[in-house]
Image 1 (cartoon, rainbow, N blue to C red):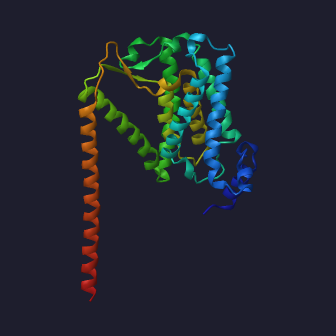
Image 2 (image 1 turned 120 degrees about the horizontal axis):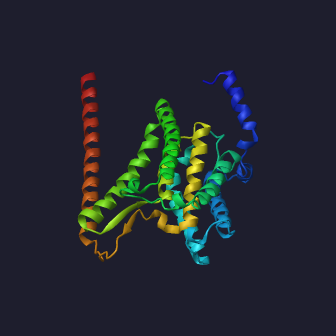
Image 3 (image 1 turned 60 degrees about the vertical axis):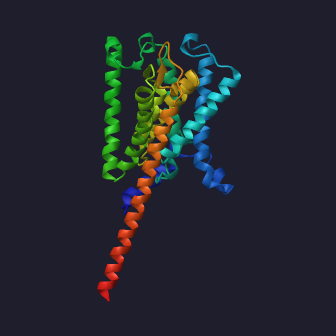
Length: 306
């Protein structure tokens, strides 16, 4: 139970203008509150995408810092970004945020979100950062400036991520942070196994900054405090900026090496389907086993009582 001081602080936060939602009252007025959070999420993504496009086409960035988008490419990159983001939204369980003070369409989220979009676009103009590519052995190619930048930014990020993990453990919500990361890791690990072990593909692992930002955002999805909301906004800002600047290649973590082979993937798909069917059958059998044990135990209890 909240004491009087906590209730007073909570009410003051609700009254603060940085928490005020732009669209919530309108959706509640139309009795469409069930659609509000998803709408505000998509609208925020589109807003950030447009901000990045304004920066990209304003002459602020060097033409070599981004790829040339056709009008159709601009739209399809945005639609692909939204499609991926919907998966990210539900994996992060952002539709069930318990504290209704925290919303996407408020200044608390938009200020760090916009700053992240603009800031990362500007960081791409720094020569020693432009050459930074996270592939195997990338640390051997880093300059002293890049090492210092990555060291300082990593310490700050790890400190806040550690705080969120500690808080989630205290609130018994650690699984909410861990499960999406494990799911993403399993999917891409399976992808690597298919490419490297089944098909012997000649590929290079290249982690783009938008992909990493999306994964990092999963660790700030427990919106029970301001820092989680702010760091989530920063990561999603990087995610949106990457999609606009570089397009769908931001999701290509496996880059095809030169002289790559055309692969059939026939046996890979057969093996994967077989493993999925085996796992499904094992799960179904396990469910029946648990139910039968429960029925047997209940029968024994009733028999003893009689």
